[in-house]
Image 1 (cartoon, rainbow, N blue to C red):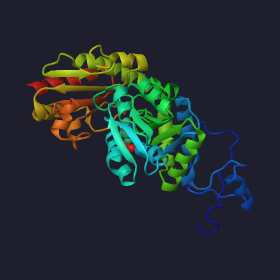
Image 2 (image 1 turned 120 degrees about the vertical axis):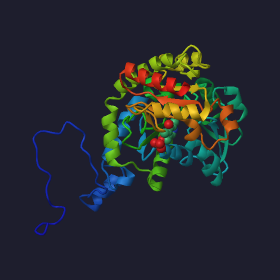
Image 3 (image 1 turned 90 degrees about the horizontal axis):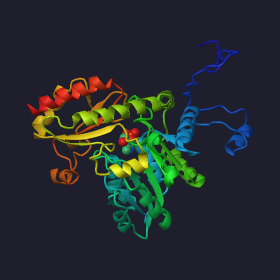
Image 4 (image 1 turned 30 degrees about the vertical axis):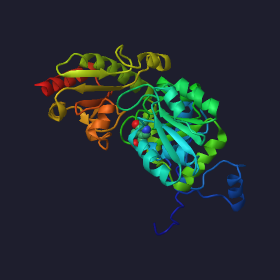
Length: 390
Ligand SMILES: *Cc1c(COP(=O)(O)O)cnc(C)c1O
């Protein structure tokens, strides 16, 4: 290091090129001259200046998710919540109103109840399975509607077409968090969504080793506004996380299809086991939104299964202890099956009465089904549920 300037060692030349996307962790980019920097900032030449403003690994990943969603100009953020924040806080002003679905992801609900009101944005919640209830909650100041298509953990299916028609008629932006459904099941922009959001952390990246988000709007000016907010507030994604997520995306379709098939098999196997009160899966004939799921998602009814057993907390503890090969972890979309208990994780802030109103008890579990052999998975759950009932 003593006989050269620090940044002088050249990159080895090669007549061939790498097959894998290079990982570029550089925070800064050296320009050739002030004129060249002018060209870059004024859009006459492509290039990067500072990683908070953008970097190649984020752009490669965003372009791939854009293609999956049928959108363009989307960008990647440091988490799914950063993407939700870029959509809400990058667009709304004090005095605006945002209407959310009443079963949004927990932190999105927290943003609605705490952060947005603190900044002078009014918020409301309504049931997205009922477009009339959503319409009744709209105010003159409503500027955005935020929904998920399949709710967590009760797996209710939103009336996407009813809500999209409402948003279009009233000139309200419709933002859809497509994390649970993914573009494999539905592309919200093809059904009237103005903004599409992902927690890339979940099924898209798929390996529980990268925390990332994605957001894109159909309107380029809206994209620019959200991107400007994300750059200024530093919602930037790490190049390494983007690189990992891109690697994960190449197997996304395969993982999704296998996990969905497993979910369908597991849901049917759970039904009828001792102490089983109910099984919720949008592809089952007994699901309350089965017809809407079929109309919106076809057979793409996802990898999430929710069930409820008898016996309260004691039975719940027995089940988790017996399911030793299933990670009891509050995430979803990993290649491995994970099990979560809403009463002590995602929904722990709610009173037992409020949980009961959503249909959740101490016996409720949500399963994010992975890609394991279905027979092993079913045997593990069957044994755990028998142990819980004994
Ligand atoms: C996990 C999740 C988020 C938040 O994503 P993070 O990457 O954890 O910040 C947002 N929406 C939904 C539906 C999620 O499941």
